[in-house]
Length: 221
Image 1 (cartoon, rainbow, N blue to C red):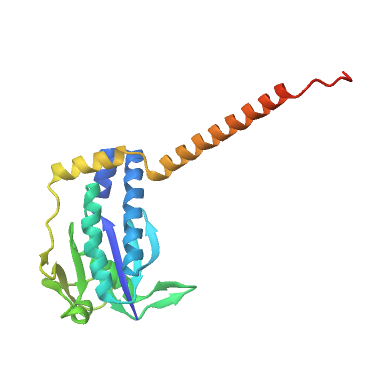
Image 2: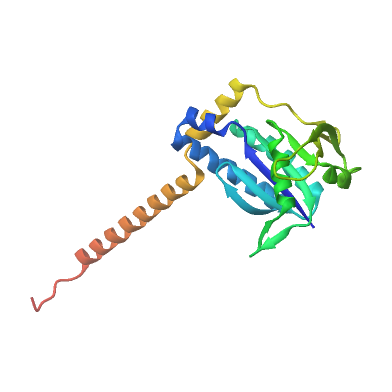
Protein backbone atom coordinates (compact mmCIF):
# COMPACT_ATOMS: atom_id res chain seq x y z
CA UNK A 1 0.00 0.00 0.00
CA UNK A 2 1.26 3.43 -0.93
CA UNK A 3 0.29 7.05 -0.50
CA UNK A 4 0.49 8.82 -3.84
CA UNK A 5 0.94 12.58 -3.95
CA UNK A 6 0.72 14.87 -6.95
CA UNK A 7 1.35 18.60 -7.03
CA UNK A 8 1.68 21.27 -9.67
CA UNK A 9 2.31 24.98 -9.84
CA UNK A 10 -0.81 27.06 -10.39
CA UNK A 11 -0.85 29.49 -13.35
CA UNK A 12 2.58 28.34 -14.51
CA UNK A 13 1.98 29.30 -18.16
CA UNK A 14 1.04 32.84 -17.21
CA UNK A 15 4.01 33.17 -14.86
CA UNK A 16 6.41 31.86 -17.52
CA UNK A 17 5.13 34.49 -19.95
CA UNK A 18 5.36 37.15 -17.25
CA UNK A 19 8.98 36.41 -16.31
CA UNK A 20 10.43 35.09 -19.56
CA UNK A 21 11.84 31.60 -20.08
CA UNK A 22 15.24 32.15 -18.47
CA UNK A 23 13.90 33.63 -15.23
CA UNK A 24 11.06 31.10 -15.13
CA UNK A 25 13.59 28.26 -15.30
CA UNK A 26 15.53 29.82 -12.42
CA UNK A 27 12.34 29.94 -10.38
CA UNK A 28 11.48 26.33 -11.24
CA UNK A 29 14.91 25.13 -10.11
CA UNK A 30 14.50 26.95 -6.82
CA UNK A 31 11.04 25.47 -6.33
CA UNK A 32 12.26 21.94 -7.05
CA UNK A 33 15.15 22.33 -4.62
CA UNK A 34 12.68 23.31 -1.88
CA UNK A 35 10.36 20.40 -2.66
CA UNK A 36 13.19 17.86 -2.67
CA UNK A 37 14.46 19.10 0.68
CA UNK A 38 11.00 18.80 2.22
CA UNK A 39 10.51 15.35 0.65
CA UNK A 40 13.66 14.14 2.36
CA UNK A 41 12.57 15.62 5.70
CA UNK A 42 9.12 14.01 5.50
CA UNK A 43 10.28 10.61 4.25
CA UNK A 44 8.83 10.86 0.76
CA UNK A 45 10.26 9.42 -2.44
CA UNK A 46 10.35 11.36 -5.68
CA UNK A 47 8.95 9.34 -8.57
CA UNK A 48 8.80 11.86 -11.38
CA UNK A 49 9.17 15.54 -12.17
CA UNK A 50 7.46 16.94 -15.24
CA UNK A 51 7.84 20.64 -15.86
CA UNK A 52 6.20 22.35 -12.90
CA UNK A 53 4.74 19.15 -11.39
CA UNK A 54 5.91 16.51 -8.93
CA UNK A 55 4.81 12.92 -8.28
CA UNK A 56 5.93 11.32 -5.00
CA UNK A 57 5.23 8.30 -2.83
CA UNK A 58 4.91 8.09 0.95
CA UNK A 59 4.41 5.11 3.21
CA UNK A 60 2.17 7.07 5.60
CA UNK A 61 -0.72 9.31 4.50
CA UNK A 62 -0.18 11.74 7.39
CA UNK A 63 3.40 12.42 6.31
CA UNK A 64 2.21 13.12 2.78
CA UNK A 65 -0.36 15.64 4.02
CA UNK A 66 2.18 17.33 6.29
CA UNK A 67 4.61 17.53 3.37
CA UNK A 68 1.90 19.12 1.24
CA UNK A 69 1.16 21.78 3.85
CA UNK A 70 4.87 22.52 4.35
CA UNK A 71 5.41 22.75 0.59
CA UNK A 72 2.59 25.25 0.09
CA UNK A 73 4.07 27.58 2.69
CA UNK A 74 7.65 27.14 1.50
CA UNK A 75 7.10 27.89 -2.19
CA UNK A 76 5.17 31.03 -1.30
CA UNK A 77 8.55 32.49 -0.42
CA UNK A 78 9.13 32.38 -4.19
CA UNK A 79 5.75 33.96 -4.94
CA UNK A 80 4.33 30.65 -6.19
CA UNK A 81 1.14 28.76 -5.38
CA UNK A 82 0.79 25.00 -5.72
CA UNK A 83 -2.11 22.58 -5.44
CA UNK A 84 -1.75 19.05 -4.09
CA UNK A 85 -3.72 15.82 -4.33
CA UNK A 86 -3.24 12.81 -2.03
CA UNK A 87 -4.66 9.29 -2.30
CA UNK A 88 -3.87 5.93 -0.68
CA UNK A 89 -4.14 2.41 -2.05
CA UNK A 90 -2.48 -0.57 -3.70
CA UNK A 91 -0.09 0.50 -6.47
CA UNK A 92 0.85 -1.58 -9.45
CA UNK A 93 4.54 -1.46 -10.33
CA UNK A 94 6.01 -1.97 -13.78
CA UNK A 95 9.81 -1.95 -13.94
CA UNK A 96 9.85 -0.19 -10.59
CA UNK A 97 7.52 2.60 -11.68
CA UNK A 98 4.13 2.91 -9.91
CA UNK A 99 0.96 2.92 -11.96
CA UNK A 100 -2.64 1.77 -11.99
CA UNK A 101 -5.91 3.26 -10.84
CA UNK A 102 -4.48 4.51 -7.53
CA UNK A 103 -2.02 6.72 -9.36
CA UNK A 104 -4.69 8.04 -11.74
CA UNK A 105 -6.97 8.80 -8.79
CA UNK A 106 -4.25 10.77 -7.04
CA UNK A 107 -3.57 12.84 -10.15
CA UNK A 108 -7.27 13.58 -10.73
CA UNK A 109 -7.73 14.47 -7.07
CA UNK A 110 -5.05 17.13 -7.43
CA UNK A 111 -6.78 18.50 -10.53
CA UNK A 112 -9.86 19.34 -8.49
CA UNK A 113 -7.93 21.70 -6.23
CA UNK A 114 -7.14 25.39 -6.40
CA UNK A 115 -4.20 27.58 -5.35
CA UNK A 116 -2.82 26.62 -1.96
CA UNK A 117 -5.20 23.67 -1.53
CA UNK A 118 -4.45 20.13 -0.37
CA UNK A 119 -7.20 17.82 -1.60
CA UNK A 120 -7.44 14.26 -0.30
CA UNK A 121 -9.72 11.30 -0.92
CA UNK A 122 -11.99 9.96 1.78
CA UNK A 123 -9.60 7.03 2.24
CA UNK A 124 -6.84 9.42 3.26
CA UNK A 125 -9.14 11.52 5.43
CA UNK A 126 -10.32 8.44 7.33
CA UNK A 127 -6.77 7.11 7.83
CA UNK A 128 -5.42 10.34 9.36
CA UNK A 129 -8.43 11.17 11.55
CA UNK A 130 -7.32 12.08 15.05
CA UNK A 131 -3.82 13.12 14.00
CA UNK A 132 -4.32 16.87 14.29
CA UNK A 133 -5.28 17.26 10.63
CA UNK A 134 -8.56 19.06 9.93
CA UNK A 135 -10.56 18.81 6.73
CA UNK A 136 -13.65 20.31 5.14
CA UNK A 137 -15.86 18.66 2.53
CA UNK A 138 -14.80 19.49 -1.00
CA UNK A 139 -17.79 17.92 -2.71
CA UNK A 140 -18.42 14.69 -4.58
CA UNK A 141 -16.54 14.53 -7.87
CA UNK A 142 -16.35 12.47 -11.01
CA UNK A 143 -12.65 11.99 -11.62
CA UNK A 144 -11.81 11.76 -15.31
CA UNK A 145 -10.94 8.19 -16.26
CA UNK A 146 -11.70 6.85 -12.76
CA UNK A 147 -14.92 4.84 -12.22
CA UNK A 148 -17.61 6.09 -9.84
CA UNK A 149 -17.94 9.29 -7.84
CA UNK A 150 -15.50 10.37 -5.16
CA UNK A 151 -16.09 12.40 -1.99
CA UNK A 152 -13.08 14.69 -1.64
CA UNK A 153 -11.86 16.73 1.31
CA UNK A 154 -9.72 19.86 1.64
CA UNK A 155 -7.14 20.35 4.38
CA UNK A 156 -8.16 23.35 6.50
CA UNK A 157 -5.66 23.20 9.34
CA UNK A 158 -3.06 21.32 11.34
CA UNK A 159 -3.35 21.30 15.13
CA UNK A 160 -4.09 24.92 16.12
CA UNK A 161 -2.98 26.46 12.83
CA UNK A 162 -5.33 27.22 9.95
CA UNK A 163 -4.20 26.96 6.35
CA UNK A 164 -3.29 30.44 5.13
CA UNK A 165 -5.00 31.89 2.04
CA UNK A 166 -3.03 32.44 -1.19
CA UNK A 167 -0.79 35.47 -1.46
CA UNK A 168 -2.21 38.67 -2.89
CA UNK A 169 -1.11 38.94 -6.50
CA UNK A 170 0.94 42.11 -5.99
CA UNK A 171 2.97 40.47 -3.21
CA UNK A 172 3.32 37.22 -5.17
CA UNK A 173 4.59 39.09 -8.25
CA UNK A 174 7.16 40.99 -6.19
CA UNK A 175 8.48 37.76 -4.65
CA UNK A 176 8.64 35.99 -8.02
CA UNK A 177 10.63 38.78 -9.62
CA UNK A 178 13.06 38.96 -6.72
CA UNK A 179 13.60 35.18 -6.59
CA UNK A 180 13.96 34.83 -10.36
CA UNK A 181 16.46 37.70 -10.59
CA UNK A 182 18.96 36.08 -8.21
CA UNK A 183 21.39 33.67 -9.87
CA UNK A 184 20.80 30.08 -8.77
CA UNK A 185 23.09 28.62 -6.12
CA UNK A 186 24.64 26.18 -8.57
CA UNK A 187 25.81 29.08 -10.74
CA UNK A 188 27.30 30.93 -7.80
CA UNK A 189 29.17 27.80 -6.76
CA UNK A 190 30.38 27.26 -10.30
CA UNK A 191 31.58 30.85 -10.45
CA UNK A 192 33.42 30.56 -7.13
CA UNK A 193 35.00 27.28 -8.22
CA UNK A 194 36.18 28.94 -11.43
CA UNK A 195 37.76 31.81 -9.50
CA UNK A 196 39.55 29.38 -7.18
CA UNK A 197 40.90 27.40 -10.13
CA UNK A 198 42.13 30.61 -11.77
CA UNK A 199 43.87 31.75 -8.58
CA UNK A 200 45.57 28.39 -8.09
CA UNK A 201 46.66 28.29 -11.73
CA UNK A 202 48.08 31.81 -11.46
CA UNK A 203 49.97 30.93 -8.27
CA UNK A 204 51.47 27.82 -9.85
CA UNK A 205 52.55 29.77 -12.93
CA UNK A 206 54.15 32.47 -10.78
CA UNK A 207 56.00 29.83 -8.76
CA UNK A 208 57.37 28.14 -11.88
CA UNK A 209 58.54 31.44 -13.36
CA UNK A 210 60.22 32.45 -10.11
CA UNK A 211 61.89 29.05 -9.78
CA UNK A 212 63.20 29.33 -13.33
CA UNK A 213 64.61 32.81 -12.66
CA UNK A 214 66.33 31.68 -9.44
CA UNK A 215 67.96 28.64 -11.02
CA UNK A 216 71.77 29.17 -11.48
CA UNK A 217 72.99 29.33 -15.09
CA UNK A 218 74.27 26.16 -16.68
CA UNK A 219 78.06 26.59 -17.14
CA UNK A 220 77.99 24.22 -20.10
CA UNK A 221 75.94 26.72 -22.11
